Every structure is written in structure tokens, then in C-alpha cells.
Image (cartoon, rainbow, N blue to C red; front, top):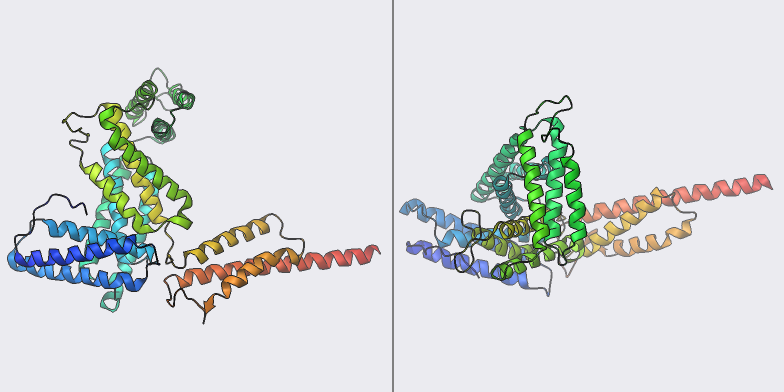
Length: 455
């Protein structure tokens, strides 16, 4: 386990707590790597309870000793909460407070980078705002349930609540900064942001395409043609608020496109190891985003997070340095930062797309999702001409329904989380099938009457 270089605790009681937390963390890592069976709530909850007990002991020890310095205990505790949070997503308990921990970590990273680069659009913040609002609602619900909730921990709730509040504060600040642009400039600003990111994507593809870059550069120059006398102006010819910043962004985009066309994706030897690692992480996360419903175990994101955090935190003054202490050139710095930020964005999307269903039930849930889409498409394209055409759908639905025991889906003698979501989806599929059957029968009766009338 790659633990950051932080001092060991001086207090003997904290050393005991560190040893216990290390055992918990290692148990979580072993459970994460075990692919022979599904992860169950009863595998995770005892480890969560043990972690919370160590937190209580740690608070007591520090209150008595007066120690406020961060040491190895805090780092291992952070790893435990990060893992537990991802486990909560894996077992389908997405709406409970512990599940918010890992998500707030990723949101904080994204917001830090947006603040650092100062290049973002309202769309970037809309999703984060929605997610933070949902997390706040889950925390309030947990606080209202109080000690009656088996997952209630004042420490964890306060911790997650503060993390959400901090992220919300940063998001609000970024939103306010967008207010400096006049309405007539926002579309140009967002277009430039989009082109800039497309250039960065083209820059990191396995096979660099000069033609693709030239098309993006042409789009960029089209935006530049909207200038009046070298400046972006209002329809009435006046200088709107934020015009200088949009012009600066445009010029930066032009210089970046020149730089990318010149380098053609060629990475200097000393930067190839970190570049290859980041491209590999980005590509793996992109692949997961395409096959998430069938291949993602949320705990797998932990390893990606750890790698990205380590590389992100290795920067000094915002830049990367090689083994000889030499800073990265501008092209390398921007390229590596783009890969880090893109990877964090993928992790964020994978987390918020996680279904509140245990991985044991995901195969059934995914089949029902596919079935529902098919039935919807059939309905939207005019339905079926006869009831017989519904037989394959009905047979599949009945086979899934027959998996239930006393109304519950049971897997390996266990009742996984997410029963309500799966049952609701099953009911929706049955409802769609019924509607299609009724419509087909009515059409059949009309045809019979028409035929008799003609006879």
C-alpha cells in the first residue's frame, strides 16, 4: 500500500489505533480484489462499524493529549473512508452518507483544477451543483433519522457535511466569476472552451491527426472572425464586460493550436513514463464509461484515484519536474494536466452514474433496463401488429420475474440491496408490455370489423 510520507503518531494510543486502521484498510483492499463472489452489505458494514469505533477512540485520545498535528493515522483513516465510500456504491447504498465521501473527494479535485486554470463553462458547474444538492439532501435525511439509523455517526456526518459545504462554496465562487461576462459573449466563451478541450483531446490521441487539428483550428479562426477591429464587441459596437478576457482566451487557443500542430503528440523521453501512465488511466476510464453497466465495480475506481492523486500532488508550483529537477515545458505541462483533469472527470461521471443497486442484482437490473428501452422503442415506432410479436419480451420478463422468492430477488441465499429499484423496473416493463398487447388486440379487432364490412 502506497502511504504518503507522513510522520508516525507519537502517542502510544494513536499507534494502537493506527495498527487497527491498517488491518481494516488491508481487509477492505482484499475484499475489493476478490472477484470470486459479489460484495454484500454484511461484508462491508462490520468494517464500517470498526472504522467508526477507531474514530471515536482517536477523538478521545486527542482530546486528552491535546494533539492536533496530522500524522499517519489521518492518512490511513482517509484511505479507509475512501474505500468504504466506494463499497457503499458497490452494494447499492448510494443515498447514504458514507457513499458521499469518495464523491466529494473527486468533486474537490475537479473544482481545484477549475479554479487553478480558470477555464470552465456554466455546464461544468451545473452537474456539480445538482450532485452537491443531492448529497446535502442525503446528509439532512441522515441527521433527521439520528441514532435510530444504524449508519449514523456524528463524526462522519459532520465530516461529509463540511466537505459538501466546502465544495458548494467553491462552486458558488466559480459561478459568480462567470457573471463577469456579458450575455452576448457567453456563447463565444463557451465555444472557445469547447474547441480548446477538443484540441487537447486530439493532442493526446494514439495517432495524431493533422487534418483533425486543422479543422479545429479552422473553427477557432471562425470565432476570431467575429471580432470587430481586433476585439469582441456587442451588437451595437461597444465593448461588453469580459471582452478582454474572451480575447485573451482566443489568443491562448490560437497559440495552443500552433503548439500542438508543431509537436504532433511527440513526448520528450523524460516525460514518457508519466505520459504513458496518464494516457493508460484515461483510456481505461473511458472504456469503463462505455461499458459501465456491465463491467464496473465502483471499488475499482480507488486505484485510479490513488494514482491520479499521487501524480497531481507531485507538482510543484503547478508544474511537473523530472528526476533531475527540470520543469516541464509548456506543451508537456498542459498535456499532462489535461489528462489528469479528464481522468478525474471520468471518475466523477462513473460515480454519479452508479445505480442504487447491489452488484449482485446488476445483471437482472441491466437486463430489465435493456428490455425497457426495447419496449419503449417498439411503442414509439407504432407498436406491434400482433400479440405474437410480444412473446419474446413476455418470456424474458416472466423468466426474470420467476427468479423472485416471496417477492424478493435472492442471490446465494442473500437479499441484496436495490430490491425496490429492480422491482419498480420490472413493473414498468410489465406495464409497457400490457399497453402494447392492448393496442395490438384493438388493432386486430378493427381489422376484423373492417374485413367483415367489406365482405
